[in-house]
View 1 (tube, rainbow, N blue to C red):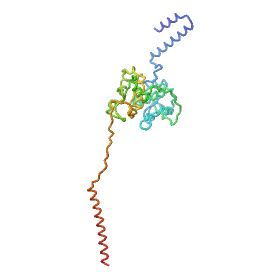
View 2 (cartoon, rainbow, N blue to C red; view 1 turned 90 degrees about the vertical axis):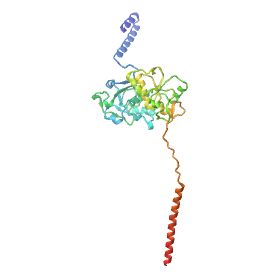
View 3 (spheres, one colour; view 1 turned 135 degrees about the vertical axis):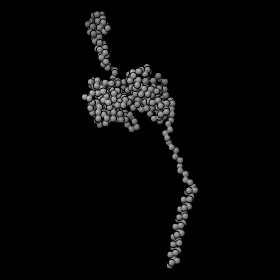
View 4 (tube, helix red, strand yellow; view 1 turned 180 degrees about the vertical axis):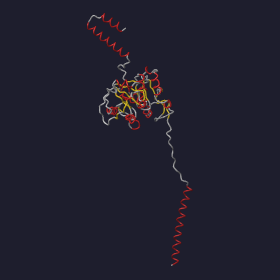
Length: 345
């Protein structure tokens, strides 16, 4: 079909310039069709789940291991950079600023232009780091769905010890942040105020969604949100089912930034949906009493009321009487002793 198209165009064009231009375009189309038939990932597929880590390594990918440091150092892909999830958080689960995250990525030698293969054991931890890399502007990201504790599908030659990150930067990370993939609290509030058509997805558990289980200041969910747990999303991604979210402007949130960014990977890499994430999540939203909430509940914090101890007045009087009696006996004994001494003289 393509050959007939080329020859038809060539016959109809008499100008050498048009001939060469047409030939170039035809060859380009043929190349793209050939690459597509071989299963090669074309431009735009820069954020994806993979099952064959060996194939990604052959493409020159650098490996980031999301597991705890000691597990990574013990065995990982040879020379993988150990980057535990805990390194991205401060006190009480506070996500580091993007400036600090860029500095952190520089300590594992990244500049933002590499193809990164993220590996790990726990899907949520692995997906979180992939989500962070996507938001800060990493050029290409592959996420291995196989567990590293079971070898990750790698050959023995590819396995070895991971490498601990440096204490200082070895490179300056300068990825171009994908800021349109992130939405903040006040922006989301404006969308709700103006009733802008949006698919707002709550990825927490169903009990949390309805306020039966509470991890924030309040229970419930953001007004207008629908429930679609991260576990359900993961099973849909595995089975290849359609979510119908492709038709909407999709915003996702979890309890906090960890859960939200992991869900971003599920939607972006699993379904190729251009979703946005609200990283503050329910933890931030529920703490602001001005933010609208559905199915709101207020948890019993288990505070006990302590009443002042009241002393029995009768018991108190008996104690005073006993003390007075003992003092009186002591004075009487001393007085009797002194009289006896004078009588003897």
